[in-house]
Amino acid sequence: MENLRKLAILAGVFIAVYFIPFQHPNLQASIMEAFHLLQYYVREHVLQTLIPAFFIAGAIANFLSQGSVIKYFGGGAHKVLAYSVASVSGSVLAVCSCTVLPLFAGIYKKGAGLGPAIAFLYSGPAINILAIILTARILGWELGLARAIGAVIFALVIGLIMALLYRSEDRDRPETGFQGMEEEAPEKRGQLQTISYFLVLILILVLAALGEPQEAAGLWYAFYRAKWYLVAALLIILVLMAWRWFDREERVSWVESTRDFALQILPLLFAGVMAAGFLMGRPDSDAGLIPVQFIEALVGGNSFQANLVASVIGAFMYFATLTEVPILQGLLGSGMGQGPALALLLAGPALSLPNMLVIRSVLGTQKTIIFVILVAIMATISGMIFGTIMS
Amino acid sequence: MKIKILGPGCKNCEKLEEEVNNALAQLNITADVEKVEDMNKIMEHDVFMTPGLVINDKVKASGKIPKQDQIKKWIQEEQ
Image (cartoon, rainbow over all chains, first blue to last red):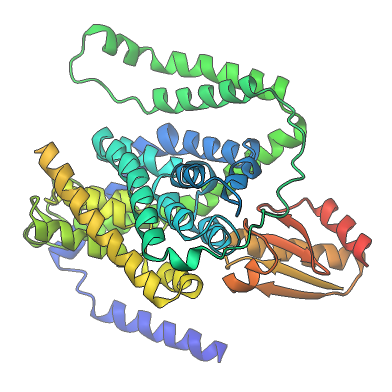
């Protein structure tokens, strides 16, 4: 059976290579666009943005006590608190959807109930720190900010609507706490130390990612010229902090989880970048396989239809962690409007066909359908509002 | 001994399974290792952060991959 499968794959590759018209100039240009876009990411974003962001994600996974956040999701938790924490905690707890889904199921079945669970499910992938940073850096800070704010508001509103719709079954909920979260190790560092450590990490990221200002004069420009010296100084401070405040084991596990994030995310991101380059070309070029006119007709401008199409595509399509960013960059460069871009960002990473199936196994079909519809409607509305503000 | 690895099939869950199998091989202990991917079954163990490690129905770890030495210690304790 195994051999048969391999043979089938081989036959598929054979037929594809046999018939693909590689001599066609459009196809050649598209293939080159894939590599050009990949090179742009490697040169402009890997060292300056992604590597520092991976270190931050690694630090979050290791040095922030996740139990202290999760305890707000228990059955006896205060409602307002549960909703607020659920809608923002994705930035700390969730770097990939595989950690979001179990937590979501846990909050729903054993914890604070449907509303907070939905809020968490929605906001988790949308506001994780890597996604916001990369969105702001590549797609512009307006979209990055709109994405973060939109995700939090969405999470609250959708969670509340769902809880309201199903309020009757939410009443007889067992008042259980979350198990296995109590035996937290005693804090080795003061809060001030942890905060200043994260502050230095974030400053390094922001400085390293600082773009060249438009005019070559003034305070901002001087700041820009000096940025690598500042980064170097901050790195020295960071090394001192890591050396003084953390023991060997902590440092090792920090670097290890940073490496794991890089290994987990970079290959998929690079594949996504190449796919975006191949299909849509670099921004301002019409060399991609999909003609610009087609994208413009579908999601250009800020019409209701464009926003709706973007939301629905976003809801069903699967984006591997962060790949939504290069794909949107390609779409924006090919004429997609800012509003539809936000709509896709708000509907996209939180939902996909595979994860709808998992959600359905936990919530049941009816609630899942309502959740998907709510997300699509709200994404469309937010897209239209944002598009109006931006134009 | 029954060992369960809880996780919806992400990379860390596979890594944990590998670590557990390594630990068992090094200790020369045989155990019934089961991978639980169904979200509802994972919830029965009150584990909210995956990967989760359950030995003889006791939750040993959740949300991270424990160190190899720690896994060995748990296996020996539960034997």
